[in-house]
Figure 1: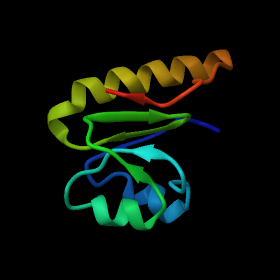
Figure 2: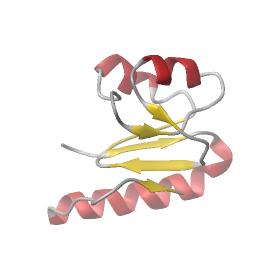
Figure 3: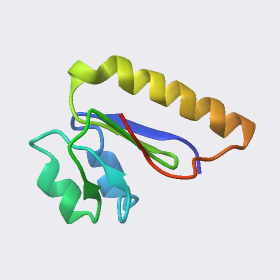
Length: 88
């Protein structure tokens, strides 16, 4: 239930952990097929927050990624959750 965040190829760890099935996510172009094959619903976006899982497609969106990650950690600390995924 903790926040898990990865940008560029970082989500490969999430794929290996088996947590991407049915998650809304974005992906670096070189990782897209692996994300789709893991069961993730991949959309074109800089950053996606789906529950406790945060994905970022490319380093150029690092600022957005970090803002959303810190926000998610704050929500987690307060015991709050998202009602629906966020596409940034």
